[in-house]
Amino acid sequence: MKFTKTFKIAINHKDDTKIGHTSDYYPLGVLLEKNGKKLADFPDTDAAIQAATYLSQKNAKETGYEYKEPELDTTYPEFSKFWFVFSLGKEETHTSSTDKTLDGSADLNNLQKLEMGKQFLEGIGWKDGSGASSVSIENAKVTEMRKEVELLKLPQLC
Image 1 (spheres, rainbow, N blue to C red):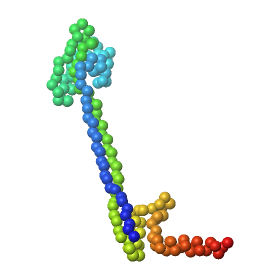
Image 2 (image 1 turned 135 degrees about the vertical axis):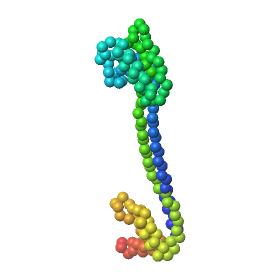
Image 3 (image 1 turned 90 degrees about the vertical axis):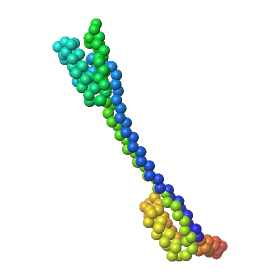
Image 4 (image 1 turned 45 degrees about the vertical axis):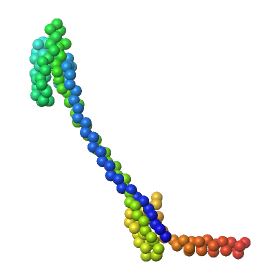
């Protein structure tokens, strides 16, 4: 009797890290609002422009880019634009999956080897849906003989 059962083992792990930023010339109102202030919070537009210039210079130092001069609008100073880099944050994703494969074969030609095969299968957790072991050892010749005996009994019962 030959026994062959295949099990597969595969371990997959995936790490994704996304870090980003957005940088552009932002209008005065947008820059102030994203930093917690409004244009109306300042006594005049010049004070708001000074605050935005300060924020832009500070941002250049913090993010390591070269400071870019603001695009000042002389007609309507509230529409002036300032270069700024906003962080989009850091997003991390960790995914793991495990598939197992084990391949083996055995020549189970005597009762001791059959019993060892049964213990092996039970040891690796070969179970049916009820939780009980689904491993059983039967002699094929005995099974055939039992069938023949049952067939012989049928005419006697009638």
